[in-house]
Length: 470
Ligand code: SF4
View 1: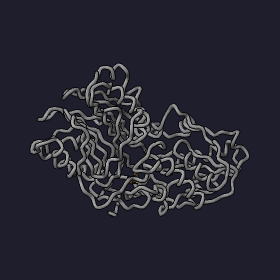
View 2 (view 1 turned 90 degrees about the horizontal axis):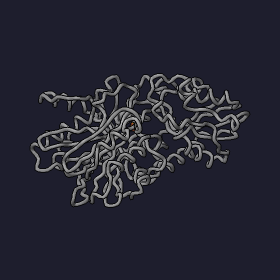
View 3 (view 1 turned 30 degrees about the vertical axis):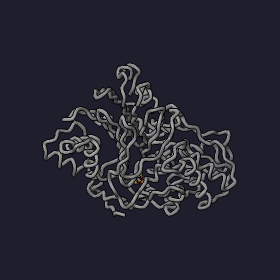
View 4 (view 1 turned 180 degrees about the horizontal axis):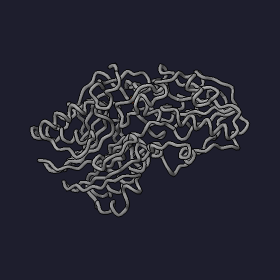
């Protein structure tokens, strides 16, 4: 149960033959992406150049009520977005998709990720008397595309010029009056993939969307690639080059759903491998092993497979509150108790191994150990299926400050004492890439190692910290 906040989820569909209710398809796809963000959601639909949208706070049922979704009508292209929260208040203007009018008509955009040179770009745009409604990255990208379009023959050319100015991590999906466009950052930090639903093309954050829609996964968008879908079909362009790639390893640890395949690697398998490695690196005698739902479960299965220790259910999660609870400032024991309970019948009198996906602040881990002791566990051994999280991430939508990261301040022994476990073990940083065996990309592991794949010294989010560039 990661204390890292969720990522955003993006979705775009180009309905080729007009036979499909693409607003309805987008609405349903938003449910599949809900795990990537629960603070807000939005849909924009494009009916031959006329774009209408609705976006609001909350999970899908609150943000996109039936009355508003039906008001959107139908069209030939649509975008959908679910928004993360860093725990801070989010303005309505920061919700997506962002729909704007400019010299070439309308343009709609949504994205996942973080632009690390945000402040530099914003200062530059401000010098040109730009007027901003939000403080988000999406509006910066929209401005850059609109500005570049003035001196470009095509929207493709304008998008290429715009993304050439971006640094950081992004998966962008946008629509012009006649085209659906997806761009993945040149490092490939954030995932993006393309597939088909009947005659319609879909670009989205995770492959599980195609399964839930009854569609077909075509492939991952390559790092630095721009995919354009129009009335002539599917086109691929190189938008930006990079010598290296740096897929976010946390996509396998926590962000993505286990039924997704990210850059050729099953997320469920990656988590099981992490559990198997943990069993080798931190063995301990115990009666049962179980995972913290949801992201620790696959790793617990891996630990059980490798160690031979019986796997069973030890914790029950309230499925009806979602990960949005992580976003509440008041992470009190009362709220945690609503979220998670121990299964006493399985635990009482047992030596237990509990596996969680990650540990940021340590508050949730401490609560889990307390719960298990109260349920009668005779020993509680905690294992974390990722390395010590010591450095803030500047490449996701969330940046938990370094002073809040327990591993930045305490040794493993001190953390173990703080959470009250009998023993504690983290996956080693060196072995983390092994969980994504088969992936042809390089990886970002900066939150564990401090080796950032881009210069993050200009982000407005990091001035308290020193970073090195890989
Ligand atoms: S710093 Fe960590 S969470 Fe952020 S992009 Fe890199 S691996 Fe992912």
